[in-house]
Length: 158
Figure 1: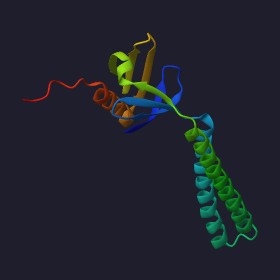
Figure 2 (figure 1 turned 90 degrees about the vertical axis):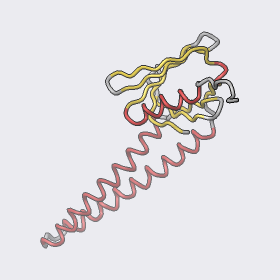
Figure 3 (figure 1 turned 180 degrees about the horizontal axis):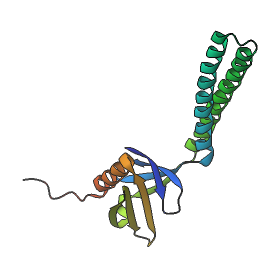
């Protein structure tokens, strides 16, 4: 199970991937987030300019429609550049393995919910403490995934 949009105690964005006996903590780079914003921004700008260009052509404003269509082309190229940038950064991030937290290394865990934010704090066997926070649906997934991961199974049914 993958839980996106999680923040660590240091304020870094991470993705958590849960397996049967461990959780992998993968950082989300700032460059990846900027690339997504550049791609989405270019697409939105391109669509907005295209709508204005169509109306300028319908109104008979000469020259403006051509200039706007050129601007649309530039915005779409910027969006394509953002998409390529995101793809390259994503590939680079996937090559680096994330930090693994094994179930056996967790000595204590607690979960709190305040103002719509769920925080799960883990006390590790080596004395270190890790904390993960998320809001909304990601917060519910975070709490449920750690609960499922750290639940001690009872004795087998007879």
